[in-house]
Length: 470
Image (cartoon, rainbow, N blue to C red; front, top):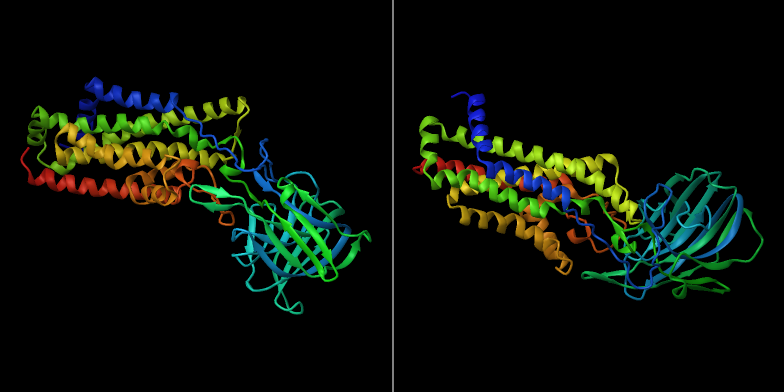
C-alpha cells in the first residue's frame, strides 16, 4: 500500500471513532475556555500601584537614592567609589554615576556603576547592560555631549577605558546628574528579603555647564525610608535600595503574562494523552491490530502513519484553539484593568504554534508508549506520570526552585518552555520559576527535549512492534 493510501486509511479509522475525534475537539475547547490568569504580588514595602513603564513601554524598576546637581548642557563628572557593601550581600547592589532625563517614573538614563558581585558596568534605559573589561576599576566617569553619553572606568583615575557610548534620544538640555546607590532585594529560596546598600564616594570632580548650587539628595521611586546621604570633607556616604532594571513578576503588584492564558494546556494534555493512547491500545484490546498489520506488513510504516495522522489532527486543533484564545483573553483581561507584560507579535505567535506542537508531540509520545505497553490504563498512567504530573508539580508556587527547574529542564515537560512570553534579563536577580512564567531553557531548546523523548519512545515502539506478535 502506498504512503498516501496508508495515511488515508489511518485518517478514516481515526475519524470513524467518535470518541477519538470528539476527544481532540474537547482538548481544543479546554484550551479556549479555561485560560488561567497568573497574578503576581509585590512584597515588602513596594508600591501597590500600576507598573512603571520605561522608554520602550516595558515595566521597569526605577528606585534609587540620588545625590545630584543640575547640568545645563554638555559636561563631565568623575568620582572614585571607595567602597560598596549591602546588609545581605546582594550581588547586584549598585553605586556610581548617573545622568537622568527627568524626575518622572521610567525616565531615560545612562549610568556607569560598580556592583557588589558583577564588576563595573554601564547601563541605560533599564534593559541595556554592558560589562567593563576592567572589573576591578573603582574610578568612574560620565561625559555628556548633547544626547550622547560616554561611560568610562579606571583603576587609578589616570588611565581610562571606555565601557560604552549610548544615545538618549530627546534628552533635554537641562538634566540632573550625580551619584546614586540602589540595591535590589536578595533572593532567598522562593522569596526575597529586603536589602540596603551603602557606598563611600570620593569628592566628585565636574567639568562643563554645572549649576553652582550645592549637591542635593533625594529618593527616586520607592524605598524612601531606606536611603540617605552624608557629606564629608572627603566625599559622600550614600545609602539606597531598589533597582534600576527591567521589572520581573515579583516587582509588579498585580500583573499577568500572555503565557498564563495557555495554562489550559494542563487539561488539554490529559485529554490528548487518553485519546492518543486509545488509538493503539483499542486495536490491541479487540484484536484489530492483527488485520491492520496483516494487510500492511511493513509495521514501521503503519506506526509512522498513525503518528502522522494523530500529530496532524492534534496540531491543527491545538493551533486553532490557541490563535483564538490568546488574543481574546488578552483583550478581556486588559479590559479588566490588569497589567499584562508586553510581548511582541512574534513571541505570541511562537507561544501559539509551540503550544500546538507540544500537544502533537505528547500525542505521538502517548501513541508510542501505548504501542509498547498495549494496555490502556497502564499506558495512560505512564504518560501522565511523565508529562502531565511534572507539569503540574512545576507550577506549584511552593515547590523549591531547583526542583521546578530540574523538572522543566530534564523531563518531557521542558517542551512547555515554548509558552514563555517573559524575558529573563541576566542583570536582574529574581525568583525565576515556571510558576512565575520563567523556564530554565530557551523556548525551542525546551521543545527539543520533548521531541527527544518522543523520538526515543517511537524508536522503542518500532522495535517492540517488529519483534512482538500482534
